[in-house]
Image 1 (tube, rainbow, N blue to C red):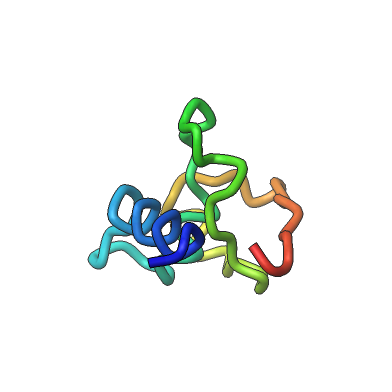
Image 2 (image 1 turned 60 degrees about the horizontal axis):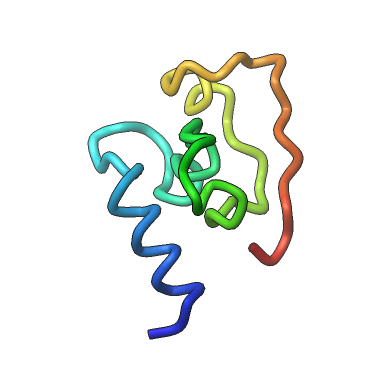
Length: 71
């Protein structure tokens, strides 16, 4: 298993809630565990996250996190 796959799987297991709105990558992008050693390298979506998903996860709708392509 590659390092990228291992990080993706770790973050998915830690952050993804199948019962919550949004894809696993959207939910991991919204992760706020800034003390996590994988925070800066966590997988992120390359597409805008719908306001309905952001609101459900308690993210300020005015907040716009820059998306990083290829991570």
